[in-house]
Image (tube, rainbow, N blue to C red; front, side, top):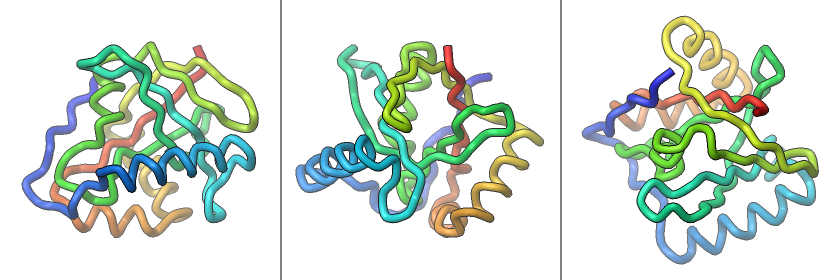
Length: 150
């Protein structure tokens, strides 16, 4: 499937800056040790930068897919724009690695659409109501991405 979610016109401010970079590194270390952060299932996502070609690492929350895959949401905390990692996935969906449960796994990413996206979204917001709040902050439809082992 295609990665085709355009940026919105309204939303919260997208996290960024040096403090955010430091916090992401701290979160990634904790996730590698425990597999969660603040009681939330999380993984470390490594993408290839769409412009730089360099590896980019980001901690993200995940939910189990019905087929043993991992589902992630490109929420950017309800910002108008898509997070950089989403754009990297769109450019290189077959050059992705995750670290989860103490293992590094090469995966392929695809964006869910239609009924499949709707079903996954219902399950995600039932488990994590915060994501419904993120959706309310923006007019961008938050992308749901499936990660499958390669």
